Image (cartoon, rainbow, N blue to C red; front, side, top):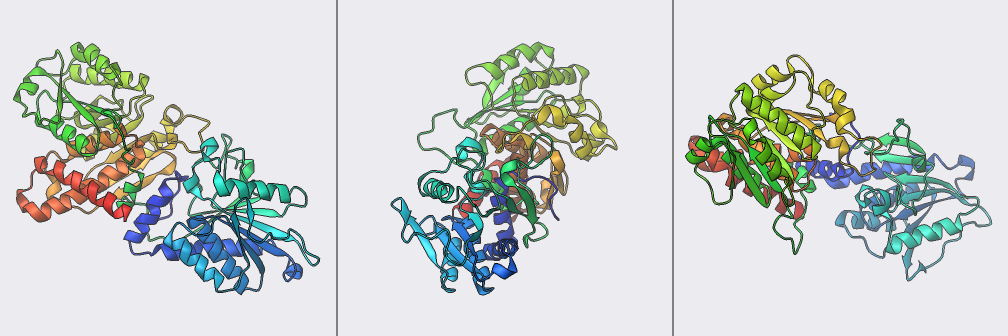
Length: 525
């Protein structure tokens, strides 16, 4: 299932980990990438000059450098003159280290940078030939983009040395996946960029043209399994790391607005949000529902004036909660609200306020009925989670991707930052036995598996809350949706094994936390 959207740079590691989980060893991906790189490099050398001109490959200490080492060996075995310029004495990943050791078997000259110069300085020109191709395999997408990607240390020194020694008669520069320092003052400008699997977010400018620093762009396939783009354990790679010394509130505050006819649904959503690592979770319910609810100590009751159902009477107080102190970093609205017109009118007003305050929203359950038919709500950054009936009432026969395409101007600012989440700002999840996720710019994937018992009431509330919690800690709507859908199914699978048919929705928040912990532990190993 080839992707049809420009990948966020962080999605590369997601797909790598998903691929390994689906049985494709990472080494196979590196070998494939290195062979593509070798083939493109070889095309830059005239056959009549093959024995004289050289191909230089700048290799960093990570897996981008590993691709370079693989390419060097392929070229050397094909009788090309290859020289490796390594930025570090050792590799920082086992995979790239294996590729480096493999390259040494072909007796390729390797120059290592240290103490401001090469251990043995390579000659830019010899009596017989020159450097025909310079391959940039220093840093891949892990470097980020823009000025934040300004290379430092050995990488910066190598780039400066390269610029000084190729100020005239420069060889053709071939970038592996993305030019090193892309978007910064030290960017190594490429004449050609070989990127893998799919274009990366920000490669094109507002006119749809490739940025000049990339040169010509070639997209090469990798041997990913067919299901690589569906949600999986790799999505945990985008979970924001806990910071040492963090204070209360640093991991975000979630506001859940629900209840009226029902009181349990908002509590479930709140518990799921808390189990995703959000610091503070407030639940606003009308008074009667609030009094019926069994409040967990981890959830903060947010008192509002309404007694039976949500109405305009509570708008001002809820709006104040959105702005007080640090405000809220995510809003989940709809669980257990009911569909009285006065309630739906209040929902519309609250969504407008959230849009003005740039608060990401999860629009769930009864709140779906407040949305204008066949239209994404204006300026809303977030996720809508309709089941089949709600989807039909909201979108009818419209296709989610077409609805989101019409909304792109309000949720996808132009021009985009190279390393921006803007392209992930809106998602529609049609929930069911298999969840279908649709985002902007052709993003599309599925979530399957889990436990049939998850068809019970309350799991939709948990999913909405989990997404809200992930939004609050800083994940984009697309990344949060993918991870939450994965965790829900993993939690259901484990809970079903332990509790059987007696599993109920209130059992699941703890299993959600366990699924997240397991994914992060596997990721760390």
